[in-house]
Image 1 (cartoon, rainbow, N blue to C red):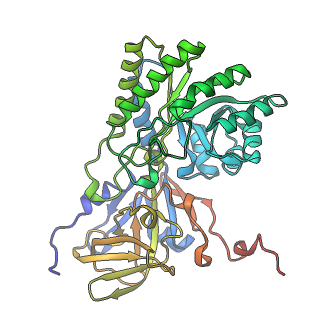
Image 2 (image 1 turned 180 degrees about the vertical axis):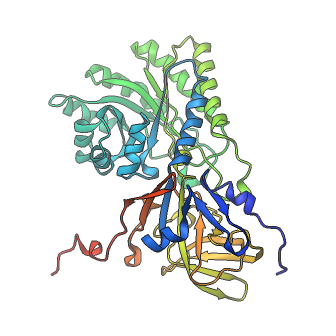
Image 3 (image 1 turned 60 degrees about the vertical axis):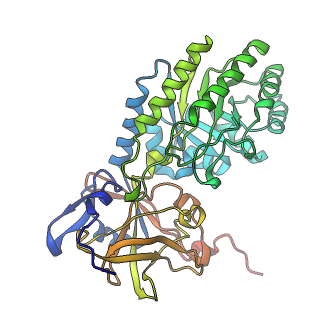
Amino acid sequence: MERMTVHPLTQRLQLFPVTAQVVGSGEASRLEIAGCNLELLAEAYGTPLYIYDQATLDASLQEYHQALEGYPGASGLTYAGKAFLCLAIAQWAAGHDLTVDCTGAGEIFIAVTAGVPRRSILVHGVNKSPEDLQAAITHAGTMVGDNLAELQRLVALSYTSSLPELWLRLRPGLAVETHAHTQTGQEDSKFGLGLDELEQAVTLCLQHGLPLTGIHFHQGSHFHNVAPLAPAITTTLDHLVTIRKATGWYPAALCTGGGWGLPYHEDDLPHPAIGDYVRFIAHSLEQGCLGRGLPLPLLQLEPGRSLVARAGVALYRVGAVKHTAHRRWLLLDGGMVDNPRPALYGARYSALPVLQPDRLISSNAWLGGPYCESGDILIHDLPMAEVQPSELVAIPVSGAYQLSMGSNYNGARRPAVLWLQDGEARLIQRRETLADLVDRDFPL
């Protein structure tokens, strides 16, 4: 392959946290984030290593707040814990007055341990276990009911327990344009109540005095086109008009879900802004309510990926460089066990060497992990500079749906996680030890 003369550094830096910069020049240049030397962090904490930049989290949140200022009614934001949840992230969310979305007893436990107040804990789940329901009743301010069978269980529990506020999850029959595995709003989705079940669910709640206050729907994750949101809002409002006439009930809150995407690869640039997404929803809801004579509900959005993904960067060491018939392989010390997204969804990523990130591209490379799976490839066919064994490589947009879906496959240990702010790095999750791998085991 001919040597390339144009370097994509400028574009790739746009994928990194807002504090990322190249300092120094020539052979002394290096990539820094939040004023921190990434090589020193990797030496101190080992690799794979995940870092989260607080300034990027704060900037993304500010985009949401500014866009919501155009909605004339009340509004709120829910951080989707499934994107990544640990004590530090939960504390950051609560400190910024975000609701924390928890799926099941495990995420509820993390939020409670982090000190998230009851009013700020919202519980989801498509098939909540008795333990999940009890945890929600004990700790949550709001719970989202998924199906009629669950509502019947809540009716029984209401005789002995005080329930949190209840929202109903609606399946609007309309999905967004994204990977099939991350679509949630289509008619055959496993999530939520069908349109034909919604009035039945509302009536059941009213008959038994359940504290029903809201409606929630979600159409999919990591989408880039806002257009499919409008018919879902229209369909929901039309059904709420019918339900209001039949029962007198109307939601105080309407959550249109989350899932707004962001660029993972330079080919995804430029990408529509968070503000475009939020303003489209706000305008559609405002006009929809006005045209039907409906009061404006509280508009709740639940961003996860679009808040946290860009704030995260994964650092890996190159262990070996291989040349096969048609590929140059950079073999890393991490892969599908800390980032299963390429294997699950065909997700595309980009990367930069940490030292001399502006060196000339030489040819395309495949960045593979160490695990015993042919699908353990983080990046396919990426223009890269010559990289030698022991070099450090940084993969941006690594803050969401990576660590939260990680595993111990091949006996891998989950990596350490650092919180970066103003030139300082704090450990917020330690690296798993060998002893952790057998901590739950009992010998024969």
